[in-house]
Image 1: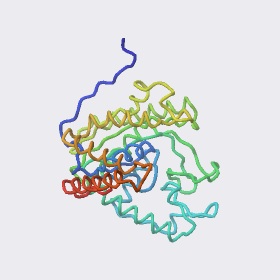
Image 2: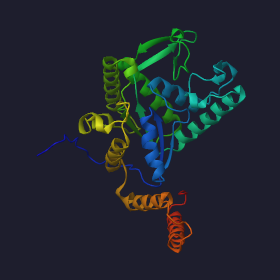
Image 3: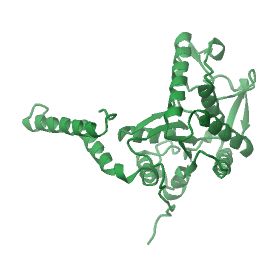
Image 4: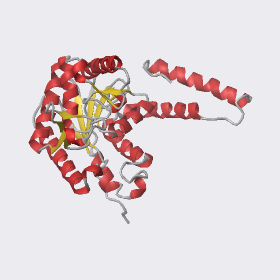
Length: 318
């Protein structure tokens, strides 16, 4: 008896992710989930220098400013609720010092540019097609920073607008990197604050635009990984969600990661990943008696395993 629908997967054969790859991730908070998995297994990865970016226009703005080296200045930040903020960045970038905010924005902008130049794989996760356009600047923002909604106009990006935004992102990346592979995903997290029906409409616009985009010929390979479909079809039960009933829980994230690994991670790295996992679990182990001879020997063996792994892959650090 079959109790679950299964999405058929075909492993990619070119430019797979291994320990020599450099993976750069941008977009919705689902990016952080996959990014943490890559970090746990000690791949070379970096995610969301400006914090979580939910819609394609926010990602486009970051990529454009990074590639064109358009630095931030005093005109790009504002004071609200005793902190300085920038509409292009998540509130994790906010600070009580205006100078610190501007400096950090520009540091992260340079990191973004370098990551785009060096990346072998760029993973972009889109979360919503709803954007808030600031009345004063007439620009779509990445984060409203709890400013009154009366300062913004809410809009739903059309398929054509999203496709054009993705084209601009790819065009800018190609100016600094012609070898990277683009991997798109649609976030399985539902934005119910927009409304249940509105969230479905938003996801429909995003997925239609992504597939329109990747169907276009380009010198940069662009692919789609069905994280959204896995959550909706293979994991269609609330036991795979956190208590808010909106976000995938740890089991769901691990399940989707395993699917991603089968499709995009080179089989030659599996043994190395298993060794990293064993070392990570060893580091996390909490003994009953830290002074015991058995535990001291365990720590010695753990250090030997770390050094042996680091001799094989220099960038790995625990």
